[in-house]
Length: 455
Image (tube, one colour):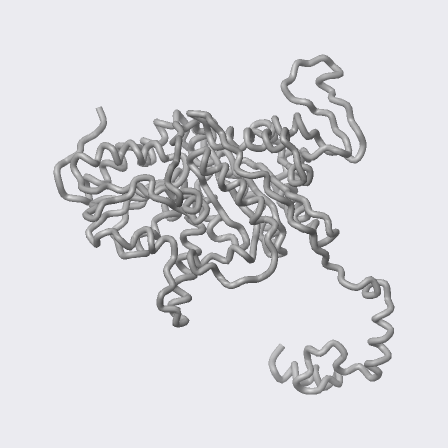
């Protein structure tokens, strides 16, 4: 409507100018109507938004495996939480669109059971069919099997993630989905976050690491969804100790309440809470054991830490996210003989690094001259001539912005196309995210003694 039409409408409704948003504007007998409304059932019971106390997190579940994938690690952590029990374990409800076992929730389900409104026997057991899974349904079960319905998954995560507000009883919803199929439910995901629902979504397997299954099961843009979605903290750990720290932190993060100013250490709005997205992999990775750095755990949560801190004359820094860690580490070892002070930056959350950086820039624009983000502190000491090589099993844009933090020349490596099938090594070579590609990038942009290809 035009302003003139709105003025005609306002006058016709007997609403005084400036009172357009008052509840009783234009009502002839406003006090009588207000008294009547106060007694109707909709308002008589008082507040309709409830609260529930936070549940204590079980603590970091340490895993001692020397070689394992993050997806398998997630399953082991969930199994241990189910085994040890406790208030939080009793309020976890898991759900999956027909990928319960293939996303490593089998151990959790065996211990905690499947939910149904009416009890149903385990058909496999009744028919004496050998199975590692226990598929009995009861009202006490804590896993909901949805069938192939990713939109239903996000609708249910959103609904269960509001239980504390709707009913005064807290649930901790955890959903698993094949990572590429997050794109099947973004509308429900968006509205769940918009309503401030609290849940954990685990996208696994991710990237092209599920290479033998072809392009339909390869995710490319999901890290960008994690970065762009408001109300969702996105992580992609490479190692089990990182995953254990992030899951423990997430259980507390999902339950935070209230509004607060940004943390001036990171400029992240952690106290305003939200949901969590973990992007995991089925690729087994050799584990880094015995982390002695006292700042390691905080760096994992903040979004990045130095796996190898660069020297004062660093020529190349390799920044990676997720399961391409072995390629980044291998390439760094090969580059060291020809380049000075090589650094390796382990990024656990491009989302949180980027959010903190943009928030700090906004704070400086408002006059907070000393505002500095975690990303800025990490890269501040790098000399101007240092080259950043970023690499991820996902879209290269996820990390390419790191060069803008301090003005360093950047070469982003990643995956932009799908449809190929083969071994992980084949596809990493094809898409240019293997050790040779990282070394070649350093060789091409940083003049010096040629490094050469791996024999």
